[in-house]
Image (cartoon, rainbow, N blue to C red; front, side, top):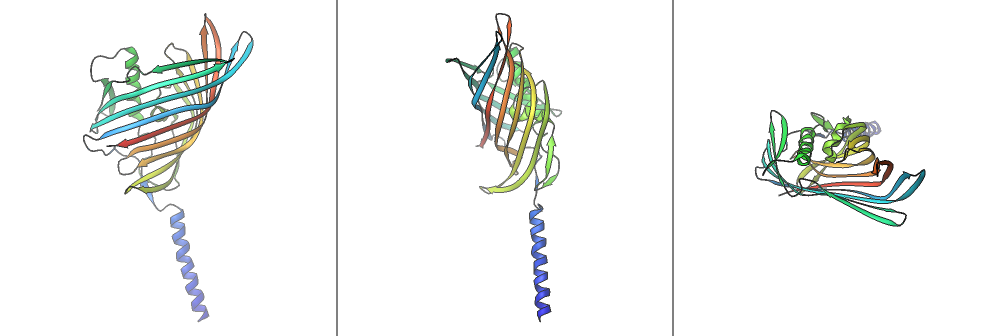
Length: 288
């Protein structure tokens, strides 16, 4: 009788251990990569913010180092009408930036707006390649650059995710070039690492979402409107929430540190400028 009890206990323990192993090792799998599944006419609103707080600015001029404080806010709102898997109509509701610097007690505020803010853009995919054009009228040079940036982002938006069903706990690294799709910026060159982990699958409002951890450490080089080079360094961590029913990212939050290095041109003199601080990036998508 005692042997039977022991045998039963061992059997029960074995079953429980196997179940825990299967659960802990991620028997649940998730397919992350696929064509977005929206109904024709669906309206997708994407709101993105990028803020730098607690920032510092350092300027080298006249053999002296001058320091100050800086804050930076960027906001983008786009509404996309889903016409088909290969056709989208995008309204750029807002795309603006504002930077406030305070140096030696003097405050300076600078703001900028995208040349396509307030306009409608037609995105079309032909032969696997996306192109973007203005719905009304021909684009000028600045608008053409922004439209190219939009098309580049669309062309790499699914490169973040591997093919096939992935087990919980699966980790992978992506080409740093995916920064174009994650941040919507045009970088001439990117180096560093962007790594991901499928952390878990959660259910919300009867839909399943993959929770994906992100660790990013990159250096990028870009140019501004007057061809001044900007070196960007970022170290961020956070999460992406991806709808498994729609194959679409509905939430993203990344936090960390950012530093920007460039030069100011004052009366033909190049003045080195470095600024940065705590950075927060949040993207929220709602579907109507």
